[in-house]
Image (cartoon, rainbow, N blue to C red; front, side, top):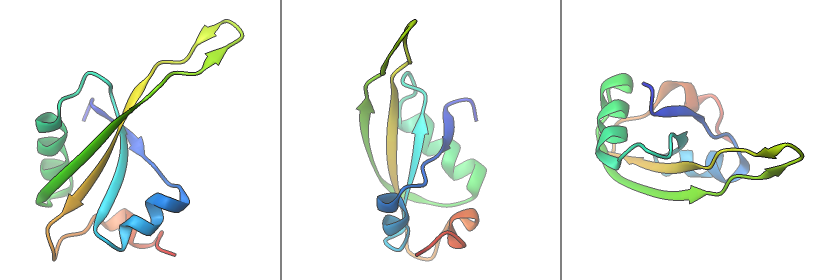
Length: 89
């Protein structure tokens, strides 16, 4: 899973877990179909919708950080990602 960097754990992303929506930061060059196939293969779930937006890099003293994409993935009813179940508010 080279394209998925890590799961995002914020107040908003934890609220979305109850709606079967999970948030991940992914590589900026990854396509939606690649991310969908990786999530379905790795977690064993069915994805019905994906939303994405690109986050800009930040300026640092010696240059800048790289930009990346954030994907909000909606699963079919009856599926869930187990590591997020314990994080619900």
